[in-house]
Amino acid sequence: MKQMWKKLFTPTDMTEGTPWKKIVLFTIPMLIGNIAQQLYNTVDSIIVGRYVGDNALAAVGSASPILNLLIVLFIGISVGVSIMVAQYFGAKEREELSSTIGGCVTLTAIVAIALMIVSPFVVRPMLEMLHTPASIIDWCTSYLIIMMVGIAGMAYYNILSGVLRGLGDSVSALVYLLVATVLNIGLDLLFVAVFDMGVAGVALATVIAQFVSAVLCLWKLMHMKEIFEFRKHHLKMSREHTAQIIRLGLPSGLTQAIFSMAMIIVQSLTNSFGEMFIAANVIIMRVDGFAMMPNFSFGTAMTTYAGQNAGAKQYDRINRGAKQGTLIAMGVSAAITGLILIFGKYLMGIFTETEELVDLSMRMMRILAVGYIAMGATQCLSGVMRGAGDTMTPMWISLVTTVLIRVPVAYGISWITRTPELPNGRSECVFISLLCSWVLGALITFYFYKRGKWKKKALGSMEK
Image (cartoon, rainbow, N blue to C red):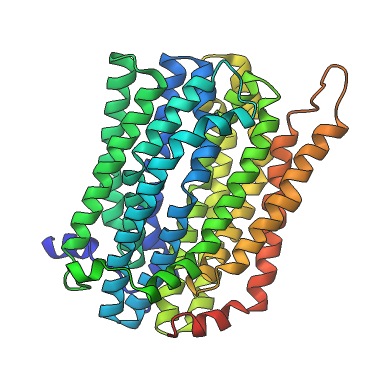
């Protein structure tokens, strides 16, 4: 029993064994972890909606696109490091692995300090640029400033848990996230329900909980001496490894930046429909987080799987795992989407007692339903390409689907549906545009995966 428990918390070699079994066993802890991660935002929204009101709920939602834009650098570092860790681990290159992990710790500190200094000065101007309603702009500002001043915890958790996953250890990251989630819920209730700190209390609770999870991840890595070394000289950023992290991670960071910019542009359209629609959008995005969980979990698993096998130069095995993992992900996504459509109204009723808000949210959610299954294919096949070293192709696909499809479709439908009764057009345009971008994105991703040019990237991705 003790041996089994120990094995559960050790790195997994995904270059051996049945592909789909390795992928599923690796994905399950991440799926549970993503549920916990989503609880961060969901509990925040429930407590704010219940204890402060619908406008406070809208404030948290309006702040999210800007928060996502400000943290894109960490997403890029996380993806780049995770790919390098997976490939060096698969290739059994201990010293390169050690230097990569140590260098990313230093790089993260530099970026976090820069953001902590700059972000408090840019938050409110960005909110004003988006025409954030006056009734919620102060709440949005305080929420974002607290989150950004405490950004180091979020940054280190996401990057160090990415290192753990690259090593094939998805269980440890899960356990630490669960600890942080429980802490976050407790602090939310304390700061908001007891101390009446409102939106600021929610942000402070999240910052503290994420800092705890980051410390736990660092502690775990420092005790993995059988896999790599974590000494002082490894903290020095080498030009070679930093360039490799940027090469692999920058496209993913830009992808998130593009997505966040599109969200900000569409958020301006969303704001034009008023506080009720903004609050409905927050509820939908929280439920959307649960619907997307299997897609993101399998996508991350496929990145690690492809990375380790690319390092071991087992490209036929990557293809087998890609097919099996994608089919399973789409099946799981279909099942979860079905449950949300059946029970979604009850789930949305947790956030607010306003019947009109629940009905509006559910109507918009039905528009997105088919898109979640399509996203299962997109995330898995993009994960394979990223893990093999081709991070540019997913970036270009994201650019096309968000900038050339989503934004024009949203504003186009809004414009052609304008009437005297609806001067800004029909609010459904926001979600119809998202559905179009997801479905077309899946088709484009499948095409580029089948072309197979990512394999050439894989062959040279770790060459010096």
